[in-house]
Length: 350
Image (cartoon, rainbow, N blue to C red):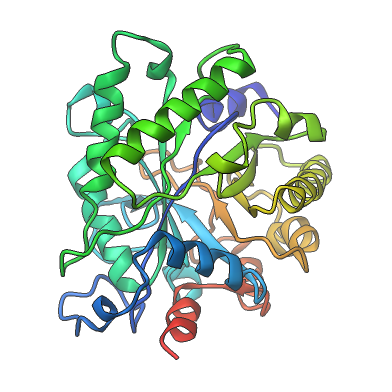
């Protein structure tokens, strides 16, 4: 992987928790403004309900995700109802990624200049659409004793504030990312993880936890700072590239999937690919030739493609209409092995 990409994605590499929000409603046609409220009668906001959905749906196919899908996309920002995934293939993704890194500063915005209040609203919209949300947080501040309590309180309050339009709590899994914190000893990471788990748990019960590593090369990469089965619900890995040549990515991705599935099975956790893709998608059959062969038949919970940045026309990981890889992305989605937002709603409304 080139140095430019290593710099860009350093904050998403290493240990992380993946926060997932899941609510199943009758339709996936956008933010529900006139919802019937039927989902309020279902036990789909509970942590156990979310865990069951993520665990059982992977037997049918992998849930497709896209980071910041509703907040912005290629050449647009903050336009209600827009989604690069929906515009190219006709459906919203099943999983929506969010990032609250910077919430502890109290500025009201994350590191991508998206307001925390907007993210809270997007999560509610996703819940009413019938989708799942994942939330990241850059947690390096946890290594600073003087700032730790404020940071934890900020995150815990945000997680506990997530509600749908009927006032029901939306279950989430909290994600601190330690990849940009420098060389921290595994013992320290495990200690901080357990401390955070306990502190957040005192304020809210609507969380699942996922542990993820960047580009694993051996089982030791997963085991290095694993906090223990009692502190984890989902195990994941991440791999991004900006290279034009796909052979090395395909090899590394396949290796990562195999290691992920072995580790998650041995620890009885849900496997997930928490961030992946090729910047600029320079290979026209990237999705069917580089991604699909490695995940077919693997029973992976979800795969999160990285974001399409509105302020950089070259920084995108999902194609838009007219892109050379757009048709391939649609073939990937329509393969019968990938689940989108309507698939979740249909299955959980039957």
